[in-house]
Amino acid sequence: MSPKLFSRSPQPLYLQAAAIFRANIHNRHWLPGQRIPPLESLMETYGISRATLRQALGLLEADALIHRSRGAGTFVSKALPARPTLLIPKTWAETVELSNQLGTVSLVQSDADVPLPEVLGMECRARRDGRFQFLCRVHTTEAGPFCYSEVYVDSGLFRKHRARMQKETVAPVLDQYYGSQLTQAHQVLNIIQAGKESAEALQIPVSSPVAEIRRFACLEDRVIYYARLEFPFHNMSMQFDLLGERKCGK
Image (cartoon, rainbow, N blue to C red; front, side, top):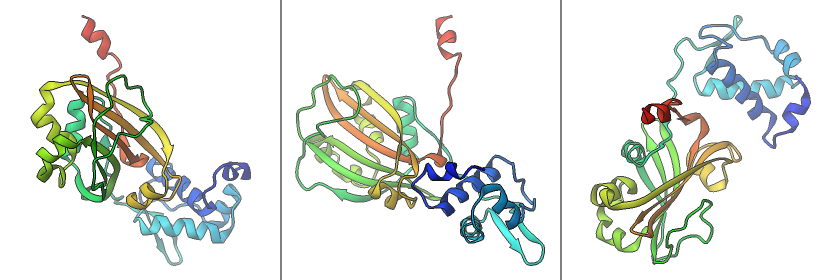
């Protein structure tokens, strides 16, 4: 493997090597119960040092992906830990369904009404005046941190439903009381690198790839909800019915 491959990333070599080895396991290139190549072979294949390889394999061992047997070698675990995966929502209904599966831990909450960010990062022709409550949170599953979110919700609606919005995800509350009245709800997905705040909240390395979702919802012609969310890429999947449009046309 060319050393240039590793030089393209700012991440330490051992983190890059660990990512490659995880992919070998998850893609079944290294099968459960199989002995992985010895250090000497890995050193030759990937062009990295023994110390770097030991650090990388140590991360996999901590994640219960491999185990070492003295005198026999290193083996892929026969029973691999489950990988929690949720579908990235493509509709408002799926957004509400996903939100209902996540726990909420508050990181920051504004004390006073604030405006929407000047740049939303997506096309929005609706009115953006008014004041908003800002909520910065990390959302969890039984497996741990799952989503980092920065949410702006209309201040009047927040005060009306404060008790629930302070402890629950916002979308299901809006859907219960105003779902039938929503006039617009749009979303865009980008692939970005985790920054300091989101990486710390999600317990992942800074610059790790994450799926960034930006979305807004409107009542009449005014934005009442805007959110920017980051999901660790390995936690998410997407599914599409590629013939759905054809079926609708029949």
